[in-house]
Image (cartoon, rainbow over all chains, first blue to last red; front, side):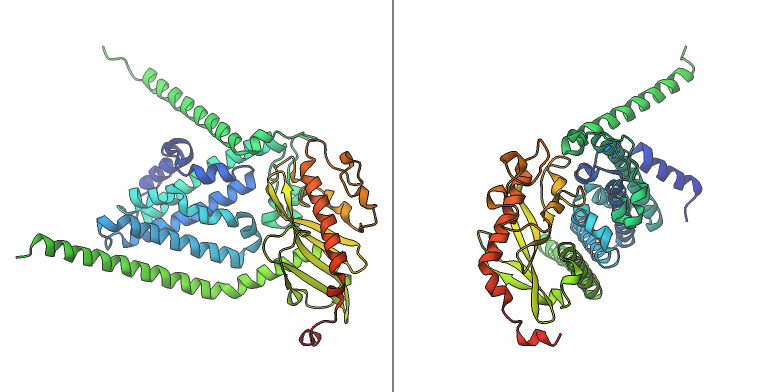
Length: 225
Length: 218
């Protein structure tokens, strides 16, 4: 079992302190490839979270049987097998979504954050903690992806939630928000360089806020005599 | 007493066995999932293919099993194909009513544009769809039906309508409009559709041939 405090600290770690997108800067490959709109970003983020939860749980359960020297090959094997299984299951049971995300699902295997959490956390902690850590890390990544996707989609084509019909069917098209009507589009934001620039801005904002918070803590603490 | 060599060998054997067990387990898991999902995946892929074909071919034009009518086509310059492609023959009763061709526009702005082109037996286009492309998002990608209705203007066109010299984009003095700033992409598509019509005209006799006996039952 885990205490409420442990649970909270794991989530704080994943969402804020060690956020994979803004702090650890791991897994940038899918981050940049798919964050051109909110729906893509959210879908891939949740798929990655699912893979991370499954792989961390699996790695943690077998951690006592895996000798240290072959742990990386074994973890890679577990992750690759799980991703392939999820790929097949999605192809079979949520086919329309698979058509959108299909080419990115195998990419999750190459997302180093999955292996990083398996090696750094799951191989040393109990299954429940590992799964919670993976979910927190995955949601942290999803959060950054969605914000990035929103910025790029808004700047690039003046809409939000475009492509929602690919996930929820043709009727969902009415949920697409045309925030800036008759928008001419801004190509840079949609292309990969736009992802780098937007991510750079997000990291800058994050660092600035952190620095400000630290200054406040210092100011509040009494000065040593 | 065990020598260092013996110890190393023993250790290698142990880790090797563990790795082998994990590989075996992983393979078994994949084989099991593949086995369980394959029929569903094949079904949805076929439904997807049929849905795509239905976009270029009105349902009223055929009553045969389209997917079963698939034939292989050798690479052909007019189709722009460098590898064998597929075609589907639509029939009503025994009469061939239309054919659906896979074609490639090789001269897009960023490489190949894959097309699916439906052509009625009278030589009129029943529909065109872009199935794969790498044109610039927001600029050349309006050839994609998901982005704009541009591609619909090919419906009911034929080699004589518009006249051959007007089978170009408007900027080149032709009958097909294209958006300013992105003419290379539509130019490639217009050319590919015209070539496919040309291909059809040359091979028309082969398409109208009576269906093979075994398909008649279906």
